[in-house]
Length: 198
Length: 152
Image 1 (cartoon, rainbow over the protein chains, first blue to last red):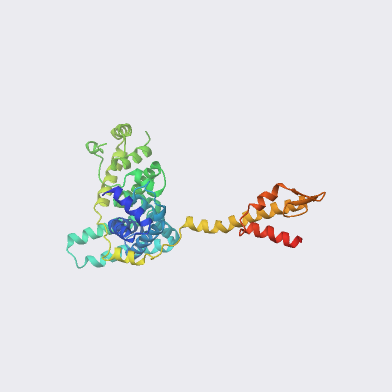
Image 2: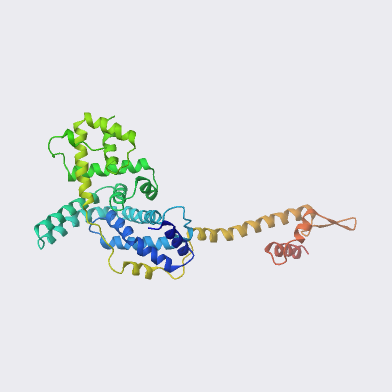
């Protein structure tokens, strides 16, 4: 990915070049949608697409202020984070209820028509997504940026407009919660030889 | 190192975000603490499940829908909006300053044009030159002219 070219495209978009902006939408649609989808949960694909679209509209409006001092990807994800976290704040109670109710039943219905292996994989994926959906939005955002987008701590801090230390803490708390749900402490006796290779 | 610190470092180690010093401290702690080693295994299991999640792709035509929703003419941004709010305010402030200046000149000299009569001769006041330099169509010049008309 050519960062300088992306920056030039965004600056052209800032001058009103719709073609340049269309190229950026094409390039970053997956990233923005993946982030929105990861943040909002499994039962909100339509909402995620709406918020991804809202992100790009906001980016178009803000493009004249883009000065190239941030990567386009980080800049777009920062807008997406603001749009999605704002949505989460506005609909926190309603969303929390709907995610927990909708995530698992959808998969259980689907598994009846699938081979056992696929059904099990879907069930496990739904379990992970439901566990992610129960995390606080800031932890979820950090986790999604790390696992779905592969961003470094510095990049996540840039997107979420916080410190690297705060990102480390957010990810630790998120993983601790997920471990309690997905990998309860029943994995057998500790093995000295399997200590993390760090 | 306390277990709470070690567990936070375990999380960062999964992401390759530990420097050599913290790696060493973590390894030393794990060598002594079975509970934290077990916690590390659980984190790894979670990490593997997260990595295995299928990632969503945009529906077909998403980019086209985005572009069709973008307005032909960009709305003024926040910065422009603030400028548009400030512009009339600046004009009003400038006018107010000019009015105050004109009133001060009038009270000091008895005439808004800065011309005072002393012994039959016209004495130039400090404001007269400034007023004369105003563009004819400027609000301040119009106000000064209005004050002169009212005075007459």
